Image (cartoon, rainbow, N blue to C red):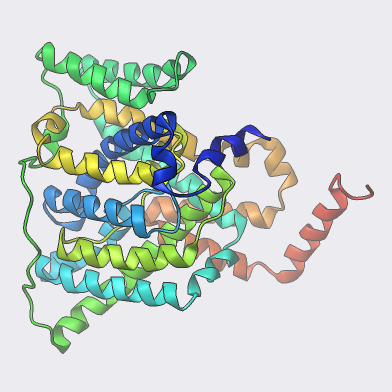
Length: 415
């Protein structure tokens, strides 16, 4: 049996009980959840700024989303939290009308996503071309990388030193042991170093309030009338479709990484329910986060729902009882981990000379357009839409010509 399949087989039953019966799997899935929760923190905090809400709001919403989707989601080990693409959609409405409209907008978006899942429309995602998928992945790798630059590009040599040390630990430790995820080792060791030596460096606590405790249920602050509906429905539609697109594309990517199927209809319905819950207890919507999913699946080698359940529980502890500990984690260390995630996310094979030479030029153009549109706007949904539209306008006879040419040059022909 190939290694990729054997590494997945222990979680095939898909039950948390099956993982709990194996101490080795339980440790692996739990530790994967720990590093995933830590990787979520800087991203979620930065996205709260975009959305115009308090960092604690996004963190609590991420706890709700992560816990809910660990049970309701259709893709085990995929991480769902308050994401940047959704924050970009919510931000303009908040800045124009205020935070009071977030709750009804998120609830309406969740209802739309539930309808999408129950009606079976999630199957439409299979028609997204592979070139668009490749562009989506490459653009995301670029966005993740550039988002980390402010955290390690510094005149302070210690910040750069911590960043480089993080890279070395994360890349080198797996050669010695894989029982404990190397990102977790880097975070613990380097945080202890900065705290015990009294170094004054940018930390998670500098990004926003990390006060402990839990908020209450979100209260409806605006009247439920036609005026409110006119304000929220464009935002709700955008939240629903951007969140679904990113989640289903991420699910497809994880399907390929783990060589296992996911339930797209369950993912869509589950995301709608999770967003409604997050709206009432947290206050902001979310979707799958591909960077943190890569941390969970690739770095943590997670394959079951237990990993995302553990991530939600750890994140809950970090934003409540352990908020002071979380606040002391250096941002340079988390940036180093996310840079490696960016490098792992990017499809380097797609830009190799041999690949470009054998790939029909229309597909290369579609990939480049997807990347350019995504990076320039910072919106993955816009990038995917641009890629699909580009593929649609490429004349059919050109695509057919290159498809036939590829089939004739295939080594399988004539066998």
